[in-house]
Image (cartoon, rainbow, N blue to C red):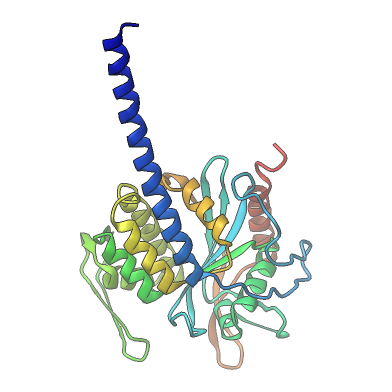
Length: 319
C-alpha cells in the first residue's frame, strides 16, 4: 500500500472512530440520565404469599435478556403519593428472545377473591389495600407468578401522549360523558383523528355504552398499539429526555434500574406487531345486597388463561 492510500485509510478510520465515540457518548449520556431518572420511580413493595400452585415470593432473580417475565401494569387516578383507584389492570408477558409481548386485560368489575381480606369483590377494589394486595389478587386469579409491577397515573399518561404529538385513533362512535366528582370529561366525535393526551385518556376510559368495560379494554389496546407505533421513530430523539422526566414524575415500579434499562433496550424497536392479546371471557351479572354489576369468570376460563399464560412464561426457558 502506497503512502497516499495509507493516509486516506487512516483518515477514514479516524473519522469512523470519531463517529463511534460520539454515538457511545450520546448513549452513555442517555443511560446515565435514565439511571438517575429511574431512582425517582423505583418503589419496592412487600409481597403477600399466595396459596396458588406457584406460591410466588417477590422478585425472583431473572435474566431479563433471556427469560420471559410477567409485569402487572396498573393505570391509577391518584398521584405518586396516593393509593388511588385503578381503571386499568393489564398483565403482560414479555419474551426477550422473540421480542413478543402478550397482554391480557382484567375487567375492573371482575368478581374474585381479594387475597388476604377474606371476601370476594370487584378486582379493582383490591387497590384500596395497596399495591401488594392488587398483585396477590391478580396472581391468585390467573394462578401465575407476577415478577414486577408498574403503575402510571392518568396525568402522566396525558403528558406522554402530548409529548409525542398525539396519537391517531379512529373513534367509532360519539362519546360524551361527564363525571365532575371523578374529574372526567369526555367529548369526542366519531372519525379518524389525532387525539391529544386528555382526549386519548377519555377515549381509553370511556365505558358508557352497551359494551361497558369490555369496550374500554379494547380501546385501551388500540391506544397502546398507537403509542408503540407513534414512538418508534422518536425513541432516539430529543423526546426521550422529556419522556424520561415524565417517567420519573408519574411512574412507580419495582423493576430494578439495571433490568429496566435492559428491557427498554430489548424492546426499543417494538411495534404493535409485537403485541398480541388474550381475552377474559365472562358474563356480567347483578347480585349481592346492593344488586351491583359484576363480571363473572368461570373456573374453566381461568384455567384456560392460566394454561396460555404459563406456556408464554415457560417458552424460551431452558432452550
